[in-house]
Length: 352
Picture 1 (cartoon, helix red, strand yellow):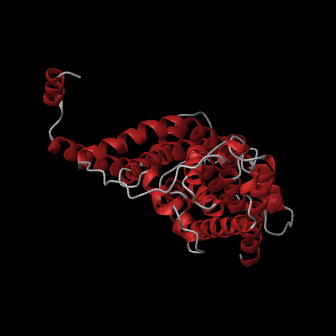
Picture 2: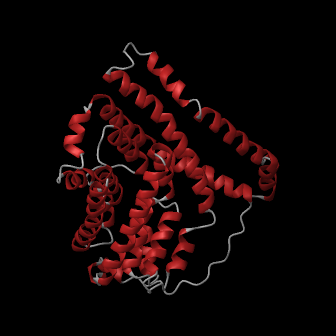
Picture 3: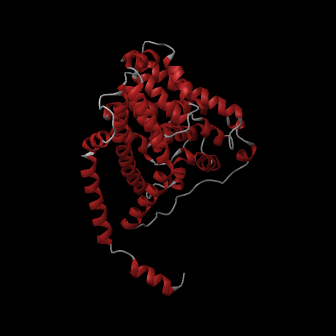
């Protein structure tokens, strides 16, 4: 880019106060619209020639309410986590975890997975970077389990849709599963089951990274870019998940749901896990389904097991991880994480 072009680009750049005012105005508009979603959904439902209290009417109302609600929550959460990501890059995360061989490395890795907004699509490059930096395999697994399963986007949506109590329960048990699973996998000394080319990598120790000097406006732009990239990729899965949730909410009788996913049936938890693993969706897509299941009387433990299996053990993610893990290591990984998910499901069904 020439000096003249840079000058023109700079002259067309909005002043900082316009950026700040725009973000503030967007936040106010978001809050006002969010507060009117219930009457808006009822108005949309009234446009259809169906009775509001019919199966179809209930399904339409659920869909009309949850689509804008989830997309608005998703946009706000992704923007905030995108701004946070400007301080917490994958390289900085790798530098923090490098050399953490003590037992507290596992909860630290899980905590970083919870706090940093990395999706499951980042699993392979992050895994390679961590292993090549000499980070223990078990510590790496703790991070990779916690990231997609209890990351900030999923937790924010869960809080917005089903409340802070269930969101907190999910956070505590997801964090525990990530920590314990990473520790168990680390104690099993499974490095020999990595793909040969991954074991051959050795990037050497990771030193201190220079602090990025970004302005607040640049961080806002990063947040907006994250919204464009992430929401642009997952919105279709949000619609699919809400459509499934609407069908469950409108058409599935509560008695049938209690029989299939109620706490009385011992097989409900493993069945939920088996159903969840082949599904191809993410936290934004599965949480509306969980909302509908809970509303129809499904047991909390069974629903949590279903959510965790969809997010942490999805078949497409296992296919991606096949690039760096052998089939034996993938099988061991699935077995260890599944035991943690099953234990969570049974524990909650027993307690509640």
